[in-house]
Length: 230
Image 1: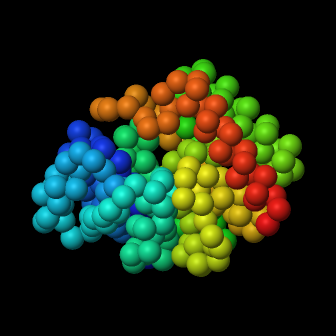
Image 2: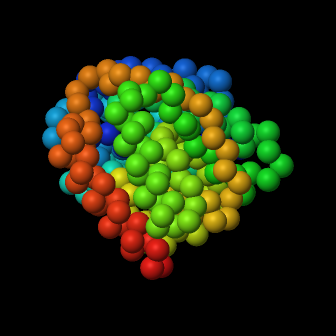
């Protein structure tokens, strides 16, 4: 059973060599394919990615001409994925692509992979980030009467049939909330611990300061309200 993992990249040229190497190591231990999406980068991500994976059979690339959001990049990769199990993780290496080995094993060992939804739970995070996560989870509990903990943790994996049931998924970071919320209604949730490390190179495109966090909170809550009406 092939597992396809989408990794959206936006200006991650410095991270790419280590990212590709970790993907290669994961492939040696599980039946995986990785689709690294150049999500409208303005640096040399596309050129370097092509050079790095030219000889790799199970690491592919996908190019988005203009960045239209994190979720858009993931969905672009999902459209060309070949696996029965689909999912995504981040390119910044704060969570290791190798974590997808443990996540895919959950499906391999299950008699009912169609109803599984596997998601990481981040360990060793800074206190301020945990406080942020607790606050967001409480907001979602109030809005949806269901506990959605560590919504943006990676990796996230599920069966292709679940993906095929989606209707108008969001193009931004709300994609994690969208998938998790739908899965809580119909799937068996399995959480796996993952170590949350410092970013190797560059900086986050949103987790820069509290002003950016507040913008993220507003967008997430706006989407949560729209999700409640569906």
